[in-house]
Image (tube, rainbow, N blue to C red; front, side, top):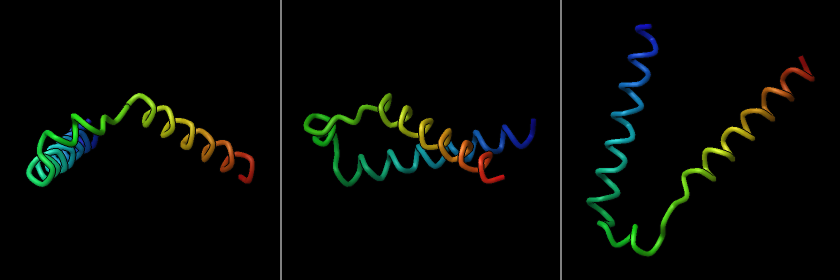
Length: 60
């Protein structure tokens, strides 16, 4: 449980720091012109992870 909490806090801090830096550097204008579809990014991440697990199992 402790590992999960530490991981979640670390991810939240990293995401927050990244968002703050992007906001400070680019501001809100980037959101108006270049929207990022996070659903597609998550889908791609799951596909890549699944393919990696399948390859590791196949070679394994």
